[in-house]
Length: 272
Image 1 (cartoon, helix red, strand yellow):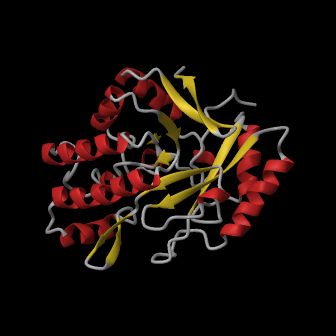
Image 2 (cartoon, one colour):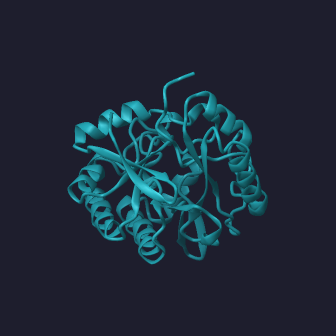
C-alpha cells in the first residue's frame, strides 16, 4: 500500500473518452492510497459527440452506486466537465469543471485539442495569427466563466496544448499572446473560481509543463487565486501523474497551498 496521495478530481472513465470503468478506477485509487477521488465525465456536446458522455444518467447512477459501496474506504465525488458551449444540469453534480474545448467561428465549432492537424486547420481560419485566435478563444471562455461561475476552471490555456509539437511556437514565449492571455486571466480571477493546475498534457507527452503556463501561474499567485491539482486522468495509471513534481514547481513560484474538494467545499492543504 502506497502513502496517502493528493486526490484527483478531474477523472474520465469509459462513460466518455477514458479507458477504465469507474469501479476499476475506484479500486485502483483505494489500493494506491487515495482517500478521495472525483469523477468528471465530459458533459454532452450535441455539436460534437465523439468524446462526450452519451449516457449521463447511467454515469450519475454508477458513481452514486460506487459512493455507497465504497463509502468506508474512500470519498467519491460526482463531478462533470462542462464545456463552455454546452451547459449541463448543474444541480445533478457535486461540482462542475468549466472548460472550453472549441472556438466557434463562421457558424462552426472548431476543437482546440483534437490533434495537431485539426489545430492547424483552426489556425488557418485565423490566417495563422495566434493572437487573433487567442482573443476569440479567451473572450468566449471568460464570458462563460463570469456568467456561469463553474466551481473549477479547467486547463485555462488549453490552446497552447500543441505548442511544442507544431514545429514552431505560436503561443508560449510570444509576448503579444502572453499579454492577451494575462488580460483575460485577470478577468477570470474576478469570478472567484478555483483554477486547476493540469498535468494531463505532460502525462500524454504533449507538453513539458502544466496548464496554466508559468507566466500565468505567477499572475495567479499575485492575485491570491486558489489552485487545485488535476491529472485530467483518462486511465487509472495517470491518477496523480506528475503531482509531486508539480507541487515542487508551485512551491518555487511561491504557492503555499493548493485546495481539494471535500464534503461540498474547497479546503486548503499545504504543499508538502
